[in-house]
Amino acid sequence: MPGAETTTTITAMPSHVFRFAPSPNGPLHLGHALSALTGFRLARRHGGRFLVRIEDIDTARTREEHVASILADLAWLGITWEQPVLRQSRRFAAYAEAARCLDAMGLIYPCFATRSDIAAAAASSGLGNDPDGAPLYPGIDRSLPRREAEARIAAGEAAAWRLDMARALEAVASFPAALPLSFSESAPDGTARPIAADPSRWGDAVILRKDTPASYHLAVVVDDAAQGVTWVTRGADLFAATDLHRLLQTLLGLPEPFYSHHPLIFDATGAKLSKSAGAPSLSELRAAGWTPTDVFSAIGIRD
Ligand code: GLU
Image (cartoon, rainbow, N blue to C red; front, side, top):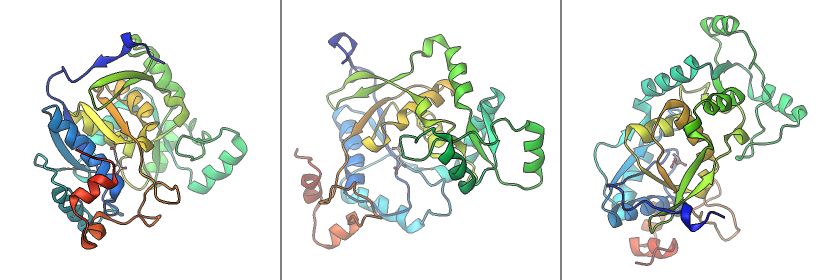
């Protein structure tokens, strides 16, 4: 438990930049409303700026009608944001550049293994799972000679690029100022406390996917830095991801934002709200007669 001496007050710092960063592969539900309003209300309270970023690296699953309905739902909730809205689908060159930096440090490698190759090797590896519940990567292709990998890519074989976690941790150990890796978890009142980050629990995470030349983890750190985001507000389901984000920020020389992870909203069966579990969308609630005030009280926003 950190003592009082480790608690800092971050609202005394110059104007903060907040963002809401939805993925447009479905409509917004009450959980998204809580995320968006958490950042927007903090921006209002502390005189900060508020941005919206559309996280559409998964171009096959992105639907323009979802982008339009997300923005309409945010406006209906009374949220305003700066223009332009950044689209990650326009940022692949920036992600390629970041991946090139990691590659120049010898920290990423191409991986040709299929999902079933990985599942089969993981089952016998005894490595366990990452914080999202996926089997930890069992190391297939980690030692493939680079010339061989490049020849396969040149011949048209698809590869994901993975972080060599052991090497990445060795690399950060040579930046003594960065250790121990940690992040500042901030309360709405602007006090922040340090949390130790353990990126090793993600194993050799994917940095560039096979199906799209980016990954959530790489794109989010590159864009938070490019947009000058100083205070990341998002759901507790991304708490563990922050460990990996701090590692990538350190390796890439990107600034460290403050973080606030808000509690998730659960449905009557105790499941986290999600489109696949049948959570009603904000537009469905609006069509059923809900007002923004009804949304605020459903997600525990009282003032
Ligand atoms: N795009 C992510 C999502 O919709 C959120 C990313 C973030 O806030 O870091 O779950």
